[in-house]
Length: 328
Image (cartoon, rainbow, N blue to C red; front, side, top):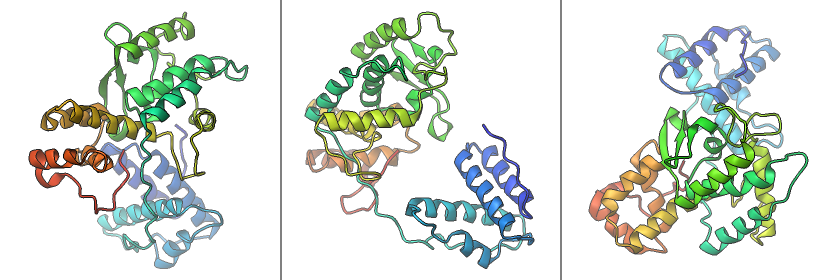
């Protein structure tokens, strides 16, 4: 992780805010980088005050050319956290109102059909050798099956090291996932067999610290590389993409995994009161609410899911009239 050095008149409070966040368990990596940019912004304005003034706050949150609304909102949110930290220290600082910027339209996850998943995997399996990424043709078929079959976040899959993959019992260990949560993820027998064959090809002499999905430089395969291949697989499968931020996104394979699990359990007559907590742990969700929101995505296809879940969990199940579509 790159060490950041703050030099503005607010450097002491920026460093303190970051330390406080990390002390309670947050990684705070991207937000720390945003605060570094804010520190540079203050220097560029020759700012010498030791408080955040209203003028400074509003100057910082002005939307920049070609900047996405989400990025602007993130900058505002990070500055608000810094100001709140300073006020807790008894210092004067202007705290931006929580809804100072308009809300962006929430992305509604795209749930792939069984046919679409099969088409994507067919194209993934046809991935050919590439000299720039010599292992691409063996990585992609397994990686995409883990993203869909295990519901992984891409970052979790790419962070796997050889010692995190139990080729005897078929269990994958996610270390320091989102919200700093560790968890064990069992694989299907088919994916375990694929992992064993992949390891023989990709890691015949690797030590146990090697990344399971390595780049040509022995680091982890990059998200950019995977996403570029994903867009090509979509096109080859005849699945249209709406452009940047429109989807279907790669993360939608995770959403699809969760919804397909719920669908299968309902068709099998499973007790959702027992299975939803298992799904929460399996997916690495922070709260039960995150898992419950997947019920919204299946309600139109399977209306009895909502009825059964309300019976088991009461008002924790979200209604279709809400505005939250995104989950982790």
